[in-house]
Image (cartoon, rainbow, N blue to C red; front, side):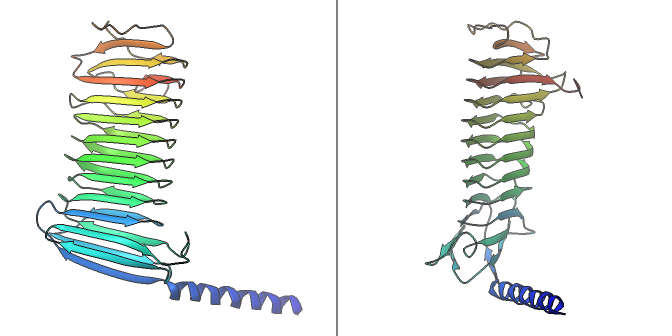
Length: 286
């Protein structure tokens, strides 16, 4: 009987705690009218930010505040919208968390910052800037825009990016590029692994560089590339029958190679100091 009473008391306590936490949450909705190519920025210390296209020339922001230790500062001037989380004294990662869902015109330029994230942007064709520390970054279905990402150790995933100018800087987070192509694709990491799975299309310049991390790049047999790969202290593996390249680059079996495929439409550089590099032909070992 005593055990039953203790269980009942525990259940009541859990219900009360849940009710208190739910009551502490506040939902806030903001609406801004904008014109073409608006500029939208959202800065958040703790919590996710998700951005998708809206149905018209309007910016809709839905924010869930997890306690009264955070407020929302907003400004709207002409074609610029700025939303910032304002932390009050005593706020921490839990009480200062705010969850954002943002709808913007598809042609808007978007800047997002969250230390813990995650950060997500999809189905846009304006410029996108995403910055975080440990935040997971997920960008997909973007076209004809600049994509700039900076993170410390949060993983970065880009999927289905076409005609993009992509620049990613990471200290130790893994960077995964799936079906990413454009005039410029540049990834620089200190120790993070870089994975590319695409066709190196668009006649672009592709540069994947990491100091101690590995690089795995997968492309189809029809890839049209002029490729250089080198790892000073790591192993380099190539699955493609490359034609010799007219370059001063010194190829060295096992640690460096250079050559061309097809019409060599795109330039590809795979560089690491001590990581392993593998240029894989899609279908091999799969």
